[in-house]
Length: 97
Image 1 (spheres, rainbow, N blue to C red):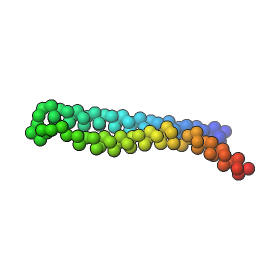
Image 2: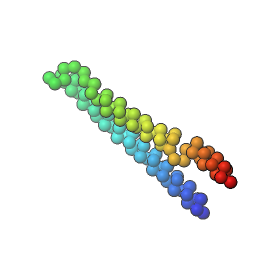
Image 3: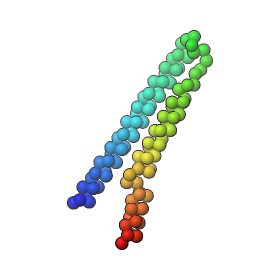
Image 4: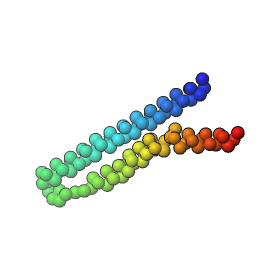
């Protein structure tokens, strides 16, 4: 029974990590879309402060996009319970016997 409880807790943590990643991704996409639209509207209306195409939004997009990428890699590739970690744990347990 303790092993089943441990598996349940690990699965629950994994589901929370996946949910957190999707929330992070959704907020990133929404905010980036709004920033791009504001920039496009400002350029299209020809406001005096915006006589040329401003690419300032690429900086937060790039850095935040990198953070989302790292979050995704941590969640789906290198996260807790990943296959390499399970294999390593089994290997260490065999060595300890």
